[in-house]
Image 1 (tube, one colour):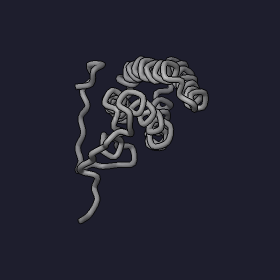
Image 2 (image 1 turned 45 degrees about the horizontal axis):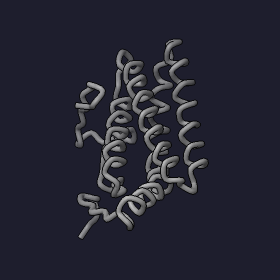
Image 3 (image 1 turned 90 degrees about the vertical axis):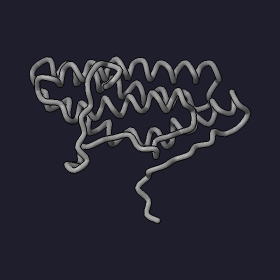
Image 4 (image 1 turned 180 degrees about the horizontal axis):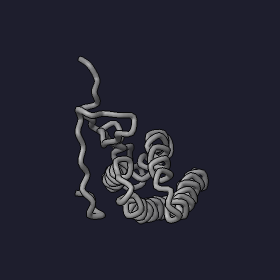
Length: 160
């Protein structure tokens, strides 16, 4: 169950290009960020799979999540004087602009645009997490614990 109250149903036997699920490959080693990222993935996955009747509510749930998620990261950057803060914030602001634009389009009846946004978010997230969020996670860990985070990943789909 998502924190927004929406259930996430997945069937691994029916994988498609629109499937999106959490993997330890997304772990960055800063637990509050990793927890928020898990929720991001769950909500985007639910939006990808939503029927027309559920799209608007899931898009609103994503918007609420993204606002809180990005505000949390912005606070961390501000509090710790993160050097790459503006570039990181600019990406978040661009995502939120897209979300608001799509909400307007969905309100006018075009529900497919929400799934298109979800596909774009699915494609955007891994790179954003790998580059921008991993740098912030390392910065936060160094500030808080004096060193880089230790990340133990499992089930990455790697062959022996």
